[in-house]
Length: 73
Image 1 (cartoon, rainbow, N blue to C red):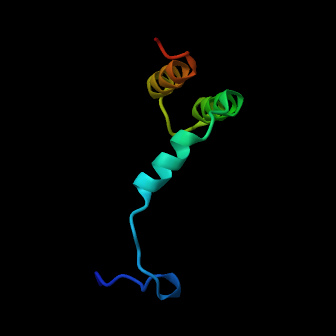
Image 2 (cartoon, one colour; image 1 turned 180 degrees about the horizontal axis):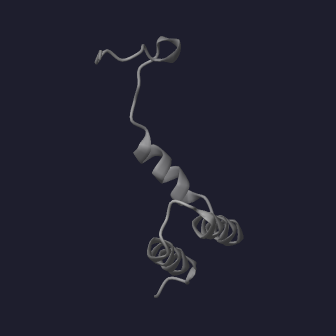
Image 3 (tube, helix red, strand yellow; image 1 turned 90 degrees about the horizontal axis):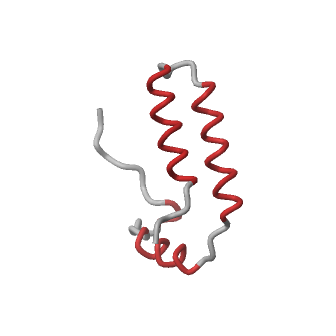
């Protein structure tokens, strides 16, 4: 198997922009309704996943429920 990577698109350099996107994301207001809808959709996926055991589903759902709780101040 070759370790050679494909060339960058359009000949440009590949640059790690994670820090830049993190700064931009922090400046954007949160959409709590959208976040709740996203988490609820993940809960539906967990409940219907045939590859997860009941125990795994319970743990995943508990984790997702934790994310829906308002942060402590």
